[in-house]
Image (cartoon, rainbow over all chains, first blue to last red; front, side, top):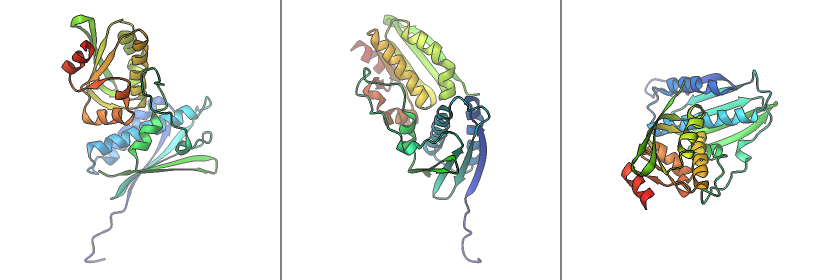
Length: 146
Length: 116
């Protein structure tokens, strides 16, 4: 409409990420290229990379031994106010938002070297939600832009 | 492919120094894990780890640091981290890593921590 600023519609990237460690780096590069012109701070870019790595690695662990040929459908949406990452896969049902968090260790003797990925993911995002839809895990995370 | 470089040296007082550079993500931890643990934990000396060249760390990188520190602690050998940049340090703080492994700013502080 004349006289009004044009609304900025969200930009969206969709990727299929194979369920294997070697697929993480190409996916990261494509997401970084998509976000390159968004004017994000280094901290926000770091958080996006962290979420990408932790969620994809978590799905890799939970996909089980029959993960050959499986993939994650990844959607990244850049809106003026926030970034949205949505991960969908047809692996066994797993709700990361309900997963028990290991207590942070108080000493090296208590430390268990694992279970930190979801903690880091939760700290990086402003909101997250999980749905099981038609046999698929749908995990959506929102990051505040900075 | 991401890579993480690792340079090992021996400082005075039989202290092992490992300088890491690159991405300590799942691929990076997988790449250096066996060698890092062998060099640091098997040496039987105190160790300082220089993170100043590490641009990114995620949970599997932290897991490698914790498992190595545990292995060293079981032999009575201390491990100190130093030089992490702000973003990497923020992630280490998010998991309260400094509660279990000393983290300081400089190499001199790391060596002083070992001496103290």
